[in-house]
Length: 78
Image (cartoon, rainbow, N blue to C red; front, side, top):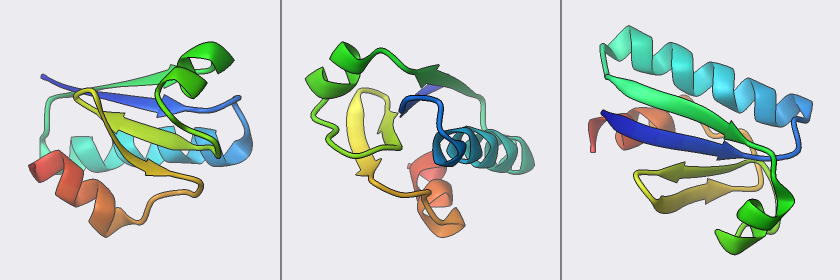
């Protein structure tokens, strides 16, 4: 199972990112666990200075904006 963490304070952009990744994973039939991380210490420890940030299987892949669908699809297929 793929582990995806969305890092952020719980703002609207962070919530939208969680929703988008979850929906696209379901549409593609990808078994993924999508978890919100709101703890500031964890977020900073992962190197994210602007949210939302996205970590896929331990690797930071995105930060600072809501990711586009094509980016999400690449992460889920990789």
